[in-house]
Image (cartoon, rainbow, N blue to C red; front, side):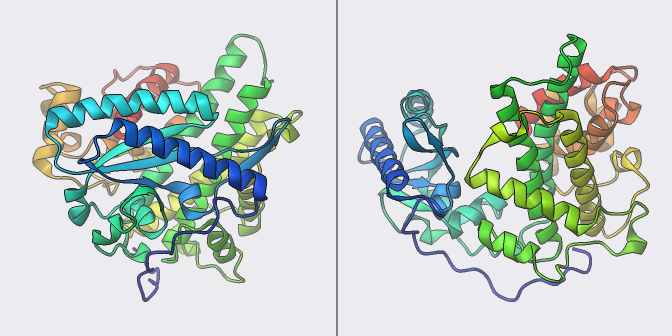
Length: 411
């Protein structure tokens, strides 16, 4: 991708971490340990023993980098518990029934534990041919098996981080940018009601959580552009703080100046702190619109620089980027892409927009999102409206709703 220098060797699978958090004391570690036993017992009660291979905890807690908060009842986990339930030899009907049962169980456990619980089903036979994706590479490198076969992921192929398809990080920026769109929606709704920019405590927590997720994703994209991405957050911070981190596109490649690295690092350090020790009350008197504008400036500049490297060429502006002939790195089989387009956009879509119809629909969302985020509250650019399958003269509010509905399907 561009002139990024890849690191030489693949990262080995990390040893199972001895802790659940980076710096939590015995009380929070014991609490998370107890939660894992409870989840494991609940899953093994739902999945028939002959079919259950393993219950794999992913994400921060799986890497030993989970966050926590201190409440009146003591320290408690803060980040989600995300699991793969690995199964064997199940018919389609049995898998569908188990998927529904696990969905109900996740809702029950979320209420009981006070932290979001999510289960995804994975057939053990699919591990050897698992997609070379950011999620799978991170899961393979750092995870915790809380029930079943401790070596269940050893059968996965090597997925070195420096070799990840660049479009995986474009997708990550899409997903975190969609959270910024939700923040933008919230502020515009409050203004339309005459409430102003003030948020209650719950809204403020979600608002700033979304902002910081976007900032952290910008760090991932900058590291990926330099060929030195790593999933561990302490390692990410160290690499971003290196004396001369290779995270920028050269000046002649971009007509718009990139925010100084110091500005980005200030936000990144703040987002890093709140990932592990959230304390959103400190923003009680902040102006949400100012914070959103600040993060949007970082997000758009990072996406632009990353996409210039991925494409190997520049583009004039976000209207130019929206063009259907500018690939967004989401690949896919042409026949499958066309089938999905026909299913979700109707049989006339290939005639209306033939170039978009042959690309996976996620590319439409990536093309449109920068315009939605930078032209809020106005009539949408005709190219963006067309990508969303909307009439030319459509207002931003309707376009944002359409975007988020599609994003929920293709994220």
